[in-house]
Image (cartoon, one colour):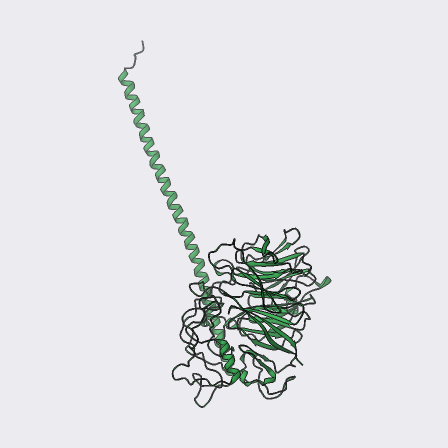
Length: 613
């Protein structure tokens, strides 16, 4: 007979099982807490490793920047030594480096260091400017100090545009109030000739605002031949090179040695037959070539912000100027403002600069590209947006319509150019830069050939590329510039192309035709460059060509516009007509020979260029 378990024995067993269960449960909870703690530590270590990796990358970039600065300084000193040995020492900059210079900018690309962010940022608390301080720059990019005529040997000018001192400039903010032009203590006052006086007035007051927008020491002007610069004996003035005293149509003897850049020539030393002086502008003609043109100011169009771009309509009757948040269209004949195009639906916070404008061939529509990555097609008559083209991931820097009006091409900081169909309102092709050698090879400028078959694009990686518009195939890669390419334009024949670069030069490229068209091999790239135009003292920001193909026009951060002969590569004349960088130049395609300029001084100007008789 089996004994029956006692009831208290079952209770004890149940209590033992319960106790064991509680123990296991506590251990499981403890293990879970340990696991969570381990996961937390692992995640923290992963974040720490990521931060360490990022710091390592930053240190590497900093090391590369410092290395480049040392190399640049060595190159600058070598160039200075070469100038001294050749007998053309440069004038010392009064007061040393500009104390208002900002920190060197990051690479120009998308994001916080977008392409034109440094050009048109507001000096009050804006991001670093496009230009690094003089002592930290590549000699090939070093901004020359300005003398009072707008040349390379004195302090930079400051201007207060129509928008007042707080309006954003390409290189800084406005200057001090009028009347602050007294010479520094101990410095003899200037006694300029009548033409020089008007030219100095155009430069605006010298004073408290530094070139890069900060508050700097008062600028001191040391005009050549007027007074003694530091380091110049009292008995000697340092004369600026004079032009030969020849006739108006050819060179003559007089000046010995290398021909100076026209930006270095003192207007007072130029014969009247080789210069034109206006109320607040002047032009100097090259005495080494036959004079073929005369230039005159037609209209001045004041704005409340930087004028980022200018463009004529196909019939030459209208001019569009892109500014901050708005585009202004003018009648070229009488400078009457036809309309202002502004998207009221766009966000109101911050700036929204219109980087590019372009008329449709029939003149009914205007395309605008801006910092919000949108391409707007405006109906000019109704002042309404007909369509948005969306797809770019970064700012829109450039636009161009084809002559037949079927397509429009856009260039962006997102490393692409895009071809859009005006009929279907669709993107036909994305022309992507595949090269990975450069960190941010954003597309800065696009142009369509006159026959609408090809698209050319300049980019931050120093290259010019050409694509086929019918299939999006890359045809040519043109190498030769030493710095970013900021502007491209086709010559009227469609077989040659002009580019302007931050290396201060322009280049004329021969494109392949027929069976010869294709990718240039390394050995053929130099052959593609037909001409290099040198003479600007700072970044070349915009290029254009005249309808007859006789002239190439360039605008620069040195505030000048230059007309070049594409056959010889020689400059016909240099025009100083703005108080700040010339960001954009445009040629009227029809009617009277006119060109327009847009500048960081808040002005657009319309000029004439006629044959010189």
